[in-house]
Length: 320
Ligand code: UFG
Image (cartoon, rainbow, N blue to C red; front, side, top):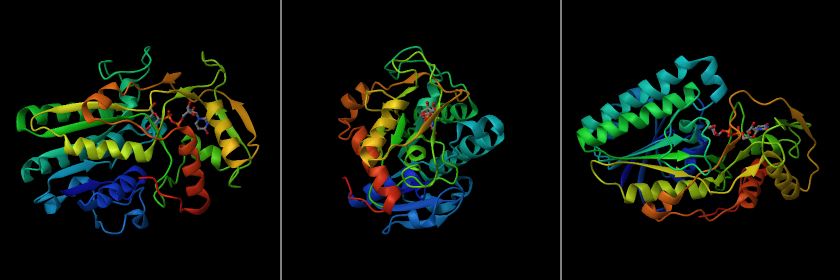
């Protein structure tokens, strides 16, 4: 297929672009490089530096769009909500209008567990009513709602993939954020010699060891779900899938995995909770398993191992 990937110079977008190219697709990456890196665009993809607001005629003849480009820092979204409405909502609206004008039939969107806010059920199915608690979650859910309308009114085959916690790397494509907030890369900075100690944000949660529980998914498994979403897309239907492993790990369990993978005694300090962090977020991926035929292959050990190899060398054995 002829595909356009927005945000293909970023972490998840570059990994999925590499998988699409390996599967034989023709890929154009559109990225404004506001947070991405041009050298992360996989060789073989055509690169266009542009904002999603100004995608112009780059969608002509496309069979599908995979839309990763977004601002994605929860804390920043609370401080500067306008950035999230302008980039994630206004930008996505402009992109969808361009998709409609060009008659692109398929659209796969990076949605998020943040749509669910702080649900009191676990695991979380797609039937849980979205109730985001910060502007990042609001902005992603707003686009999910747009897709429902565009599918119904304009026949778009749309899929929202609600990611839980994504980690790991695919060879030289991995996580390189200027501001790193995510747990695994922050922990690995200690054995990498980039920081002395790691912080545990909250050890007084109502969980077995007092630290928050999340559902970690390998980026390669996440990427495969995008290829399946494209292949199974249906005109006029908006599908929503939660993507996670279905297993929760506490911050302390992730820390212990990092210690054993790196063979480093990573010192850790308990700190106050990070505002807005839910206690537990674990996905039910039953719908993705049933309708996409998807299931994750890799677990927390491979996620940490590949993130560590990426951080150390930027080159790791590829998992396909
Ligand atoms: N954490 C630490 N120390 C750190 C970094 C994180 O203890 O140095 C904790 C956090 O407080 C949280 C857990 O580790 O309890 C995971 O934190 P991440 O920042 O890695 O991930 P989040 O669960 O906060 O974020 C994920 C997605 C976001 C999404 C959010 C919705 O990465 O895109 O879920 O809640 F918005």
